Amino acid sequence: MRVVIAEDDALLREGLALVLGTEGMTVVAATADAEEFLAAVAEHRPDVAVLDVRMPPTHTDEGIRAAVAARQAQPGLPVLVLSAYVEQSFATDLLGAGTRGVGYLLKERVGRVSEFIAALRRVADGGTAIDPEVVAQLFSRRRGTDRLGALSPREREVLAVMAEGLGNTAIGSRLFISESAVHKHIRSIFAKLELSPDDQTDRRVAAVLRYLDGTRD
Amino acid sequence: MERGGAVEHGKVVAALRRALPATKWLVYGVGTGLLSLFTVVVMIPVMVACLLGIPLVRPGVFILRTVAEWERTRLRGMGQPVASPYGPLPRTLREAVTDPSVRRDLLWLPLHGVLGTVVCLFGAQLPVSAVRELLFPLWWQLVPPSEAAALNGLVHVDSWGQAWLVAATGPVWFALWLVIGPRIARFHARHSARLLAPSPGVDMSARITQLTATRAAALDAHAVELRRIERALHDGAQNRLVGVAMLTGAARQAIKRDPAAADQILERVQDAAESALAELRSVVRGILPPILENRGLEGALTALASDCAVNCSVEVDIPVRCPASVEATAYFTVAEALTNVSKHSDATTASVTVRRVGDRLLIQVDDDGRGGADPAQGSGLDGILRRVAACDGDTRILSPLGGPTTIEVTLPCGLLSPKMTRC
Image (cartoon, rainbow over all chains, first blue to last red; front, side, top):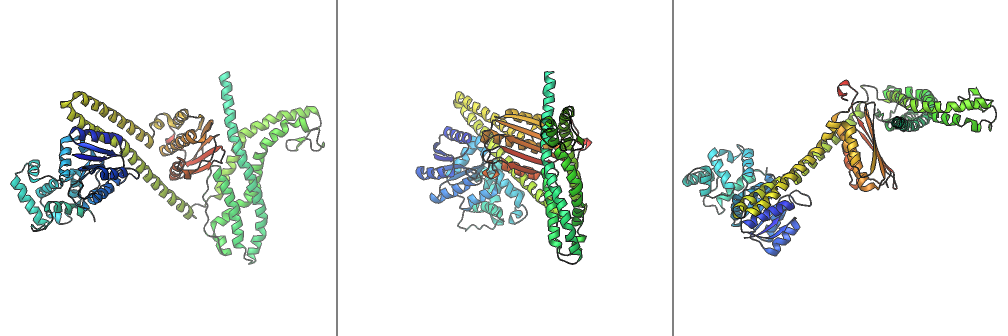
């Protein structure tokens, strides 16, 4: 798998390249700012891009804007954004333009190498990977204020893990429940969130988006 | 003896440093005093005209306020700030009479014009007398016998013996100048400030406006400071620690396949952890330097001066310690100023003077460099201005092109109280 990295801190850039390299991925370009990153993406057409949120010159949300721009230039490009802290507006900006092949994780997750690589592969295959911290914050903030309040605690847990991008089997093993129980909870969630089965959109993604949209008051 | 001599020498230099500016302010005091005397003469016909119904109230009060403001400016320069108590100019005689600031200014004017002028003149002529009397033997025979007098013309001199006696009084005048010159200046400033201050309870709107602005500046400086700390933590320690987590993961991957490579990675983990600690220390130092707590302002400033690339002297004269926030601001000011001296000034020597005058802390940093320091140029000066303003203090930067540069900061540090006496 061919990867382009954007990270302004030299130590982290090297560390990331080291982790990816050891896992058999090819880092075709390791860049230090958004401009270089976009040029590298255009040149190498990678399978997935990994980038930092805060980069020069303003150290605010350059990474998010670069990710959105890269996906406009190369539709469907999977991007995994790494952030030093959780900022929901970044997640919603990123996911607003489509959730396929998008990830948003805290930087230190890279240290849990096998989980990080699994998340990266999921994103590269068109899946989603949202950091549990982001999901947890959404829950704590939105609880009881809208339709999400109608969910039972167990359903919220299931939706939280689903928002991270995990499949039914993985959700079941994470929560120590059977796969059929997961199915039952998810059906109930869809019903409560009024996501009908004949909808053309991916209902799992729609359910996650409903949370993220809820933060844009 | 050698050491005693050096100490004496240091004391004389310190006394000179106090006496010279005091004399400057006394000369200015003579200026505003004579101006006040002149204004008294002008005000009498103006007041009579006003009583007769001739509309001179506005120009009259305007002149009065202008003169009083000049004296306030002088007092501010001396580190004895006095808030202006003025509202809009009164339009009618009734408004003028009921305005307490007009009454207070009218009381102050003749007092400063007569007593103030005499006091300032006496203080200001002390060094002149010292030189005059010291050089008496050189010139007493060149002037008409009636002019050959000492003690401001009180004692006539007509023999060489007397002339040498007069010369001997020169050093006495000099000593008087050193010892009582600054005291006269302070004495006069204190009374002048008392008369010119807004009357208590009235006219506080100007002071409230000033306090509101200061408070806004404090909040702003606070926000800027927090942003600085956040940035420093994020770009420094936090990134290093993320690196530690990342590289630890990489090392755990490598340890089974290639222990030697894992060891190399672990070495970098250690480096990253150590530099995270170093970053944290520097952030903490920026918030409240531990050295201030351990060694007081004088010790902390001496340490700064010895780190300075330029030869730098430090003179601190603080009988009691100031509040921690004031010490931190003073430390920050001197640190920034000396960083500028090292980086931009091309100076060969610098000096730091910190004195406590009443409830104010006066900080002065001088260098003999090329000048041209400008807060708008994005140097640390801007930070000094903001931080000092947040403490309700004043900053003056004198830095003509070609040098030298002087930065004067005045910080209010509360009244002397036994609780704050820690040394």
